[in-house]
Image 1 (cartoon, rainbow over the protein chains, first blue to last red):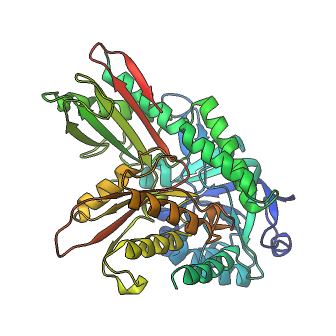
Image 2: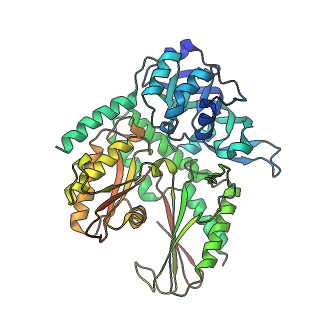
Image 3: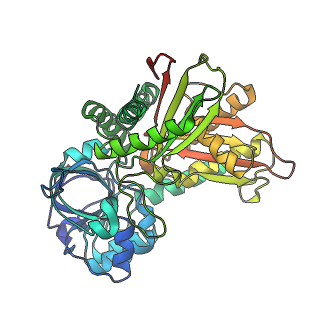
Length: 193
Length: 296
């Protein structure tokens, strides 16, 4: 098990290989459809994502107090399907300098190429394992775009401890998803002959 | 009898407590995969997550899904009261953190934080004297929570479909189903369940396909030909090697549930409702005297 801690260095990220099991600790930021579109279109980011992690996730959060001023608690926080961000991801990696993308289901060729070019890595968290991952969130630091995007689409700055994931796409350009897709296409062809 | 409280409890159970058949299927799958493989690790995490969610009454998955209530009620039942109770229960469950703020106004892009809007949650009512083990006077309600990642992988074929070499017969249906599983890869949170409708029009096709997802994983279609097709597609899909989350392995599907409906001479639809591993469905039967009987 490889340990990664924020801020993530280019050297540490480039050393990772597809299939490696990792544990991520430190600050990570959630972002999904609204945020990716916003950033890819040149929108401002209130958080510096350089050498940071972007987690494709819309958490279930509840306010600690009824007026919402006492902070938030994350009760469920699994990854969302990353492929929806494929039209934006490469540009977001280039512009923001994000080093680690965490999601599920894998991403396409443009993201893979951006990982190689800019020294980024795609990690697979377990899809739907929301209760388990919520346990690894130790603190909600801040929330941005809460009004504009709503709680699910907002950018949540989370402190995590030992978030477990597997390298799905490495900075050398190897994608486990591409390999599974191509091998399964071959098997499908045989079945349908 | 307070229907709002009863339905809020139905939501709590559905969102946090995976049905026994789905749990058994995931545990079986975890034992079949090669020890130490990605597939085995993922399935192990899923079972761990399942136990944790149940113990804490927290959502199994952060995408608490489209909430669809399927009702079967005695003729003459005031369904407006039940629908109102379902809406109030959704608001209550959202406040409790059992449901994510999961509703977006499509035009403004704003979050509808209560999760209640026109047609949301969805309620389907059928008025029937009795049947399927339900006695006269009893009300039965099933809740399905189906996440968006899996819904995005649902699809509809119109046969003949040359792109998959599918003609208007069960061999054509088989080809469509395997194609749909291949296209879904891990995007819909495999291992999944296919709810399938052959025939009907486009709209009824999707509804009927979704209804099949209420069937227990270990049952078989009453029609022997459909039952054989269910078994065959399940086996062949699991031979594709897509595996949990699309990271390889022998568990790509947990079940295939097919129903057939009549069709127009001009149409032959094959509709696939793809459900993720988080097979969140729970049922409840309420007797005329208010006694609750939890199903599955």
